[in-house]
Length: 319
Image (cartoon, rainbow, N blue to C red):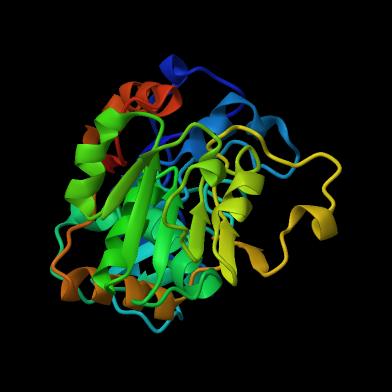
């Protein structure tokens, strides 16, 4: 089968398609024929430096999510031909991932979907929409009466969060560093847009009671100061490229009446996948993506992924 295989650190220009054997099925695992796969920034980080860590299996086929059909269900309870999405659980790091025509994946991370979405639209869903869904409904406990501030709203997760929040009728305030992004944010569903200069707390007029923090530690303290009381802040992203808060003192840094949580997307469930598909279809919204590349165009796709100029989700069309 065709696949992209990494053996160590490399540039985007070094990524090529090669031929490797189709994986042999074993109990507890499912062989999936991949139709399409979403790309993620973590896969660029894997290529650029993370692959040198001992916990990364080498050689490795990257890719932490995919959509396709069950080729061999083994003992999973699925059936050959079932439409499925798969994500996380070590995919593309502990075992071969989605930059290939087939992937052998743990049954616990393969989920049947009942939908008529085309493969490219469905490929935009797994990791991005699961992250947004979990952040909103598992961590922030979002309700239609809430006002949600999405910080880092032009990111793929930010755009998905706006869609899902509007699907239940919540009010959404979206932020961007550039006012030129406002038209796009409002087209997705944002009710109000703010330019984010890193200090929203001193000038925000309507304080939200829930904040989805996608910039991360760089603006987390300001987000906690933005929220009304009681208020909830979920730290999910690290778009600000600051990964930790030095000398973090929770008693002094978390304001009274503010509840701070975080979302980790490594544990998807069938219930969550069903919930995402239901919300999108019931509200008439389509999953968002911006660019589509073939497997043979992986160099161009990763160059764009690394530079961050896609303007949305990048999809690999593998079928």
